[in-house]
Image 1: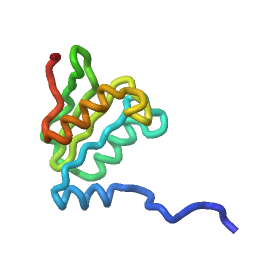
Image 2: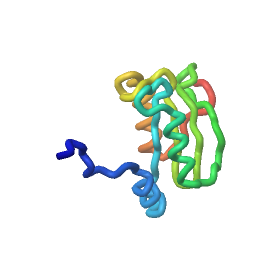
Image 3: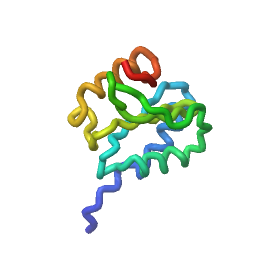
Image 4: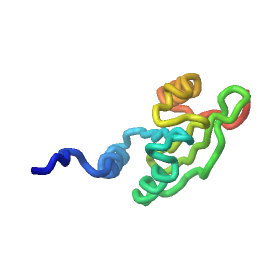
Length: 114
């Protein structure tokens, strides 16, 4: 008898594709020091979607510091959070709040220091 749990999808990429098709706004957020799901793995997965890049890597700011980087695809925004691990709000609560505020306001993250 196997103890393996196999009731979960191996990937969420089909779900992301459906959300994009249904024009649901999506931000994928990744801490840049996340050892469990590294930025490179997330980028690899997103690249498999075959989305066109509309705006390549751009730094975003949280007050006078770089908060991370963004890359805009057709239908999806990928955001990294500088110095954050797997649970971004735990590692970077103020930057996480900025992400939430900008997402809810449907605004891009600031690209200049303020």
